Each structure stands twice: as structure tokens, then as C-alpha cells.
Figure: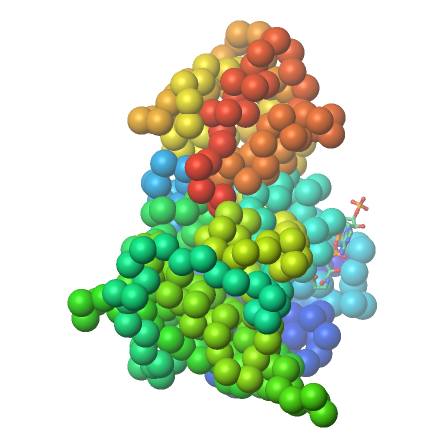
Length: 409
Ligand SMILES: CC(=O)SCCNC(=O)CCNC(=O)[C@H](O)C(C)(C)COP(=O)(O)OP(=O)(O)OC[C@H]1O[C@@H](n2cnc3c(N)ncnc32)[C@H](O)[C@@H]1OP(=O)(O)O
């Protein structure tokens, strides 16, 4: 095959993006969404696969900073816009793009790469592990009651225009970034992302709405949501579709949930995406009736095992030697000693005997604290070579806050 990989020329973006559009079903992105993705495209980090004059493959990367346990922001390549033309699939084009991209990420000095996958089966072979989880739930507000913490009545709610409130919502988002592993510091331009609200994705719901939570004139939280009206012979039976609830303190969070659960003419609150440790679980009287269900969300790959493991802190003192297998990025292979605690860590190559053996994919799954090493070991994905090392490392790698990313990219 004569496919050539080359860095994207801005003049070729339309043809390049058309391949991506088609690979995702050929429902063209609306103009504002297209314009945003074009503006956000980092051309020097985007690759096209070309068969003569024909673009047959696309991939890109955003220069992100990712929160890791302990609160540090680590440079991370946000892998995106991956597609291969249907006429050229299963000939190794994706593999060649991943090869080139991971070499480039390494050269750029980014210790990790992250992505949200269209299908979870694609990226494990390239060393990505499922590192964060996202939760959905449906609250039957006719049956489920909320028990609210003190201070809720001190929070004022205000309906706000989505675009006009963008800056204050971004401020809330930015203040929350260090507090939750998996969140990404948004660079200029990304504030337009929450404003994208294509009609094709609304499924009968209203345009996206915004309510701000304020205390003493300061915005302390917000929700982005929509109303999906429904009328039957028996009356109103609408839903509140919750895109996001982000708040700086428990009273603000509870005030927003109280609002969402009491919108007139609705009887259901559909939570579209939240962390698996979301506050709402403890506010509701009957969590089982809300049928929470989780799935993997952000996949993470350690591109530089040493730098990545040094960048985070550890829940408990740890001194453990990993034997890492990494066929796709062999520079990571071998034994690494991680020594650290809640203040900091070192991670160096060692000739000492290994305590735990695993592949880089499992290390990626455990890196933000989203999957425990004990749990991965129970599936045979981590092998304990020194008794006691598994629990020691598993506790240390945990995170008191479940990793989560409130948006895709
Ligand atoms: C971060 C993001 O942007 S995620 C978006 C990914 N893109 C899409 O889902 C759009 C629709 N799909 C596509 O464009 C393509 O099918 C791709 C990009 C998923 C795969 O591209 P291809 O060039 O066909 O992949 P390639 O030939 O390199 O396959 C490599 C291996 O992955 C496997 N593979 C590829 N796609 C899939 C898949 N969807 N599910 C399971 N395995 C897959 C192949 O079978 C092959 O396995 P092997 O090494 O054991 O033979």
C-alpha cells in the first residue's frame, strides 16, 4: 500500500475533516461546530493519511494539561479526530497514525496521552487504559426526595443566558480543575465548547439552558440543562436533561439539584454525565430508583512512565518496583521503582527485583485512581511478585476523588 502520512496543511482541512465526518456517519457538523473544531485544530499536531490525492485517514492532538492525583497539571496530548476511510479500513492506517503520533508526543515531552474513544475495543492495543468513568442516572422526582445540607437557602439562583454567562461558568470550571483528577485546564477557545448545542442532538429537548448559583453576588456554581416536554392524556410528564452541575461548595451543589428536581411539568431528571462519586447520590432518598450506571470515559496512556509516575502524588507511602510491559512504546519497558507519598514521588529505572508485573495499559487505567490495582489483579491483569505489594500499591494509587472529565473533545 502506498499511503503517505503527512502533517496537515491548513488549506487541506476541509477535505481532511470530510473524511472524519463521513467515518462518523456522514451527518455533517453544523457550521458553528465545524468552525469551532477548525479553530481548535492544532495543524502541526494533525496528521492526514493520503492515498495519492485522496485523504483516507485523519488524526489530531490537542495540547492539554491534565489534573492528576495531588492536583498537579501535567502536559497531556488529547488525541482526537481519528478516522480512516471505509474504503481503506483494516490495512494498518490507524496503526501507522498511532505510531507516528506517540513518537511525536514523546518528542514533545508530554508524559501522557488521553482520548475519548468511539469504541472501547480500539485503543488498548496502543497502550491506552480506561482511566475515568462517567455515570448516568434517572431520578424519578415524584418518588425521590432530596435531603439538603445547611446553607442551601443562602444560595440564590438566577436563570442566565448561556452565552452571556459563559465567562463566569468558565471561572467555576477553572477553579474546580485542580480538585478532580481527569479534568483538563481549558485553553482560550475551549469556552465555546459548552455553547455548541446542535439541534440534531436535542432529541426533542429545548435549547441548552443555564442557571447560576450565587452567594453574596459571587457565582458559586452553575448547571447546564434542557427541558424535554412531554404531555399525555394524564397530564405533563416532562424531563429535565442535565448536562452539567458544577459547584464550588455543597450548599451551591444542593441548591442546583433542588432546582433541577423541582422544575414544573417534569417528573424525571436525566443525569447525562457525572462522576461516579457525585454528590447527588447522597442527596436523594432512594438511589436505587435512580438506576445509576457507569461506563468508561477517558482513556489514558503513559507515554513516559517515569515522568508520569513522578508527576502525581500517592495516597499512602509507597515503595514498589513495577515490571512494565509495553510492546508499542518499548522505551517504557522494564523495571521502574516508584517511591512516594502525599507530598511527592520519584520514579527511576532499577535493576531490583520486581514487586508487581503489568502492562502499560493497566498502569494507565490505575494512573488517575479510576481503577484499583487490586481490581485489575483480580482479572489477572496485574501479577503480584512480592507478597503485600499489591495492596500497598493499590492503596497508594487511589484517589479520594473519583477521576472524571465533564466534557469530550
Ligand atoms: C480518539 C478518537 O477520535 S476515537 C474515534 C475513532 N474513529 C472511529 O470510530 C470512526 C470509524 N472507524 C474508523 O475510522 C476506523 O475503523 C478506525 C480508525 C477505528 C480503525 O482504523 P483502521 O485503519 O481500520 O485500523 P487498523 O487497520 O490500523 O487496525 C489495527 C488493529 O485494530 C483493530 N481495530 C480497528 N478498529 C477496530 C474497532 N473499531 N474495534 C475493534 N478492533 C479494531 C484491527 O482489527 C487491527 O487489529 P489487528 O492488529 O489484530 O489486526
